[in-house]
Amino acid sequence: MQTRTRIFGRLARAAAALATAIVFTHAAEAQTFATLVNFSGANGANPAFMCLVQGTDGNFYGTTVNGGANGDGTIFRITPGGALTTLHSFSGLDGAFPEAGVVQAANGSFYGTTDGGGANGDGTIFKITAGGMFTTLHSFDSTDGAAPTGALVQATKGDLYGTTYEGGASAYPGYGTIFKIAPSGALTTLHSFDNTDGSTPFAGLVQATNGSFYGTTIRGGAYDDGAIFKIMPDGALTVMHSFNGTNGDYPNGGLLQAADENFYGTTTTGGPFPDIYGTIFKITPAGALTTLYNFDETESHLPYDGLVQATDGNFYGTTSGATVTIYGTIFQITPAGALTTMHSFDSTDGASPYGGLVQGTDGNLYGTTYKGGANGEGTVFSLSVGLGPFVKTLPTSGEAGTAVKILGSNLTGAARVTFNGVAAAFTVLRPSEISTSVPAGATTGTVQVTTPGGTLLSNVAFQVRP
View 1 (cartoon, rainbow, N blue to C red):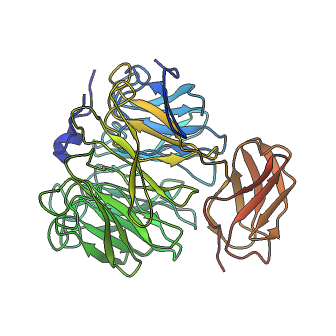
View 2 (view 1 turned 60 degrees about the horizontal axis):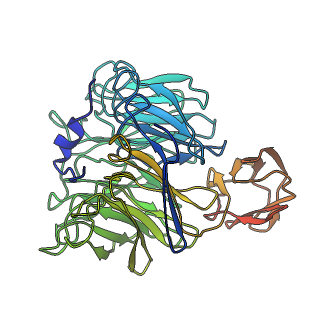
């Protein structure tokens, strides 16, 4: 069976480490860790640089880079309780080796990318429904990009935006591209990197509250140590910051815009010598960068993915670098830079968590490990840190009249929905989903849902646009 190896040959930084059921739990103080799934190859193997996404049905969706019926990777669905369903096994021509996760669009379908396969062997963009109906939307041919490794993001106007690691206008193999694709499949290349403005973007993009997109490249820029960029929806690109090694190197993960409007992220390596094991940083919309934390050799290090801001205001992420007894960690870091290790993997419960975390609407954190577990093929896990349930909206911004889905838990019997205090008409579609629209007169602020169990608040402010 074929497995994905190019991923680590390209990155040249593999961290040393190393059945489906809830088989291992570990409690420490107010934290409860659970292994939800042990991948076995047949049901997928090696979930890579991706975050799970919670769908409107309350379940989580993701990908594995290897395994499945053909060894070319899978798309899967998992319930919060750990029941896994393989929705699709890639077979090469329809794509192969999905390194990123999927995103659920406003139409309810999920969209994602594969690093290889397709009609030209340069990767694909695909769509899949919750029921498993799969469509290849685009096959890259190098001239328009190659090897898309980052997740897609749906913009407020409906198109999907993403990056390719290679390809584009520069000479083979190219420095990568930024593209947009309509949900119907029409692709436009917005920018081809030329190394001076960045090279080889590995992660996807984030659309900020100002409407622009922000992202990272792992190489290129003024010092060839990676860059942070901003790109307008029309393709005009600005380099916001060039890493120089001492303040970080190799920003493999993407950016997160936090509640304070600043962006947060990680670099997989770099930092002040000799502690060159990765950093956590903050950068303002104006481009002023602050290093919040420098990892060192005494702890697990090498944060490959970005951060998530939970409802307590703190950030959570993962490291994959191993020590003698630790095979990666889950950490918490405050906006001021105080870091706490929340869980240390020991290989039996997973190893090498290359992907990031997502906070489910039940308050728990969910993620994956590339290796470890009962079969050594990776795991899906959850971690409770004592945070309560909340609601989130899809999308997170829009003008008056925009259709909005509210995701949560135990929404049956909801009596009231408000957008920053302005009441909205709504329909409860199922226990995990409410259908509504932005009411006239609403302003930017928190969405509230009143249920028989109490009032649930949205995890981020809904941005009401003119």
